[in-house]
Length: 150
View (cartoon, rainbow, N blue to C red):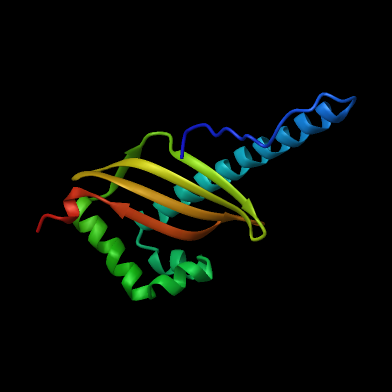
């Protein structure tokens, strides 16, 4: 993951208008990736706002089936309450590292944050599937030394 993403798609062949078509295709891929990233970042902000008011059931209910298959709603709520107990409320994060995968299932955006909470720091990863009308949560992972302390 990186704050900027570089794509290498193959050799550039300079034959007539082919170079222009090749450049246009690269531009579309990079542009679509940027829009997907922005949508995922906005969805992350919404996730954080919902966590602040305890809307765990809404987050869980609107997540992708893969997310719901990985934990029950009660387990997800328990995790989020443990994060708040150990780390406190989320405060800030730098611009995320990111990656966009485009496949048969659509666009998947991975956002990696170094986040600051009231009681410590954590690494967070959000995985979003970007589709209309809004991105949906596929995965949320958080890691912090605070989880090792009693």
